[in-house]
Length: 378
Image (cartoon, rainbow, N blue to C red; front, side, top):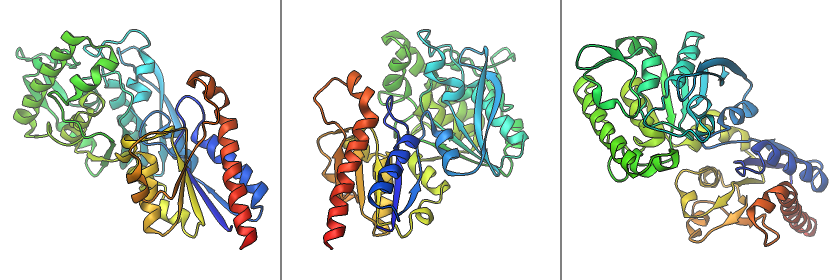
């Protein structure tokens, strides 16, 4: 073996992408001591995306105070490398920030816009928004307000819309936001194809996870319908049916309408940014993985994104995952050569996650033992 590449997502709640890279590197040193190791810890757009980027690309984490989901000031951050800023919605509007006080009728993305504005005022020419884990359903209006967009009600009073007040928008002035974003590329990392509103939209599909009951879901959906109408009327923006418009409380729709963003699959954005093809060129194989591989993994997740590109380079891919679901034949057609589960014992997840690093190491050890034996025989 001359070169091994590790490009894995974390196993949520158990081991991080960086820990996975470290384990594989340590085991590779045992079995293939002369082998070059390339570790690219990645994420698909959710929590931990900033750290994953900064582990792959030299840069810095910028700390600042912004508005949290209920407008109270909270510590937050974004990543910066060169003229690119990577911003996690979860860092300013995430579910963990609200605890048990979940109410998407009242929460805001204002802090996300503050992160964007700070990045722009400090030289960013490219902004990557990781749309994941939000506690909001405001269609990105809060973020737009922080970026200079002004919203007015029927009486001409300016206000910052939240999930439950979108229908009050009578006029929108987006001129300041356009000025700030002149010459700036905005990419929104998005791995779902849900529309802005309706039965498959942001409110019906995702707001129950954010604390919405049935009555609240109906209210939030009707508010998004009103926002859709306002965006069409005021900004000439037709975004409701775009695949991904419903992501992160319809932040997908707002990112396109207010910021001129491009909705892009999360893993594709990551792999482009870290120069995936260049970094893994010449590898004997790639190890990838995530907590579970199933039919859902075929929709923009890390394993499939990595495998498709590696296949184009003719590089074999081994997926080391926690759980293996049904209906995974498509994964093999997309470039995965073999799938290995790290689950060695029939125990509850609460116990399994305590030994996840050990089980991952044992799985890699067994894989490398087999490969070393084959290499020796050859």
